[in-house]
Length: 362
Image (cartoon, rainbow, N blue to C red; front, side):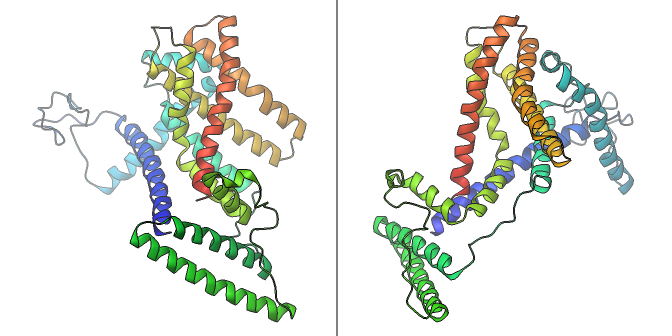
């Protein structure tokens, strides 16, 4: 059990570190792209190169480095408003001319627009914030209320602990499993006694929660069976953990989708993986912002039929316009690639959802 918990904690930390690193990189890029510093003489404080102007020609750091509170406040304000100024140039194009935005960014027009990764991180953060706080989700309950339910959950956990004990080969794993089994048996005995006191008669603990069929052949598959049982024991907790992991690992959608996009242009030599990455990141950013608008629209009373129709029609239309403009395709070429890409998108989301479900049910 300690190994399993350590793996879960490690995965959680990896997701947090990766997301934080991406955010930090984009913030640093925004901060470093500010106005010119004062001219300086002598070596650069960062790399030691001889300065020939307000910026170091080797590493790009300003020649004059401020070391006071006012400079810190200035850097923060400049980073925020510099980002905001680019947003109002990038966002309209992302919505109305996504293909042109993708093509121009790939061609080298970088200073005018928010970088794809910064836009992606911003939109994903906004999406999860809105879905979690406005979407009307239920609060998390770690275990179901009631003695009978607690008894069923504890019994199911005991069965899994005994199974792990039977498969354990390392002495440390065996000791951990024995400790876990002893704890669960003590808990079950206490719950059974409490049930007798409440009901005045012995209570037979169920081997599994009532809505899980232990004879289902799917449950015989080790990984799948464990996920199904855990989700059945506490679905609210699994959903909560899935939301958390989905946010931390949202960047994984990019590498998952790249091979599928590459297949659409496998015989074109004028585009490469970088081009596909920019296309994918901008597309994911738009879809995340679309989810935000749909959730907010549903919340303020927009008819469900309109929200559903928008969710069905807008994504394929946007993908068609983006892929047509970004890769310079004709109508037919853009149309069939859009159709194939929609299928590939379903596969990508299924793979990502399976990955998040696996992490959330651990």
